[in-house]
Image (cartoon, rainbow, N blue to C red; front, side, top):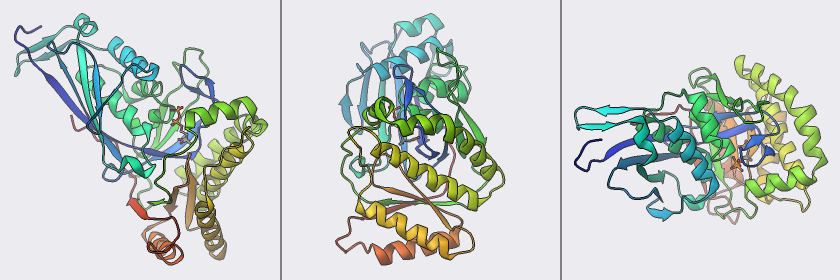
Length: 359
Ligand code: DP6
C-alpha cells in the first residue's frame, strides 16, 4: 500500500428496471432465490436511476454509506452480504498516476465509503432498491478491480434485492431462477439489448406518492406462506409465459407482448389478493387506468399499450411506438387532468436504455 493517505474513487450510474413477468416469492430468504424466472425492461437512466460513488482510503476506519445525503446504517444483512461477496472477488489494484497500490489481501482490512443519489424524488413511491443495489455492486466491483462479468455481478446484487440483479443490463433482461442450493446459478442474462426494440416508449403515471404499506419483502413472504394461487403461478403459469414472452420480445410482437405483460401484472395482483391477510397495492385510479387501456386496446386492431403495476398503485405504461405514446398521453390528460381531484399528479416518460458506466 502507498504510505501517504490516499483516496481511490469510482462513480457509476444504473437505471431501474420494470418487470413484465414478475418476481414474487422467494424459496430462500437469505440468498434471495426466487420461486420463478422473471423478465424486465431496463429504463432510461435520464429518468429513473441511481448514481453511486464509492471510495476507499486507509484513513477510513469503518464502512459508511449516505443515501441522498443522509447517512444510513450498513449493518443490515443485505448490505453485509453484498460487501462480503464483492470483497471476496477483489483483485490487485495499481494506479500509477496516483501512486496507489492495493494488494488483493489488503481489501480485507480496507473500509469503503458510499454516497448514493436517486435522480427521482424518493417520496414518489418509485424509489426502487433495484437500481440502488445494482449500482452499489457495479461500482464496488470497479473500485476493487473484480474480474466478474455482469451476470456474475448480478448474482451478488441479487443478495441486496432480488430485482436488482436485472438492472446490471440494459434492454430486456431475464433473471433465471436457477436450481443450485447456493444460488450460484440464479443470475440475470440479457435477452436483447436496448437497440433491439427501440420504438417502445415507457410512460410512468405517478398515481400516488405515498409510501407503500406492505413492502415487497414482507408481501411476498406472506404470499409464499398463504397463497395457493402463487404456487400454481410459479409452477404452471410462469414457465410457459416466460417462453412466450421471450418469443414476443425476439419477434417484436407487440400484440403478444402487451397481452402477456398485462396478464402477468393482473395475476401478480390476484396473488396479492389471494394472500392472507390480502395485500392491496393498486387503488381506484390504478383500476381506472387499466379499464381505459383495455377499452382502447380492444377498439384497435392490435393493442397499442401494455400496462404493468409493481408493489404500489403507480402505472407503468409501455406504448408500442411514439404515435401510441402521444395518444396515450392525450387520453391520460383527458381522463386524469392534473388539476382534477384524481390522485394522478405526474408522468415520467422515457425510452428503454442501457446501464452506463460513469466510472
Ligand atoms: C413487484 O426486489 O423489491 O417489483 O428481493 O425482497 O428486495 P426483495 O424484493 P424486490 O421485489 C420486487 C417485486 C416486484 C416485481 C419485480 O420487480 O419482478
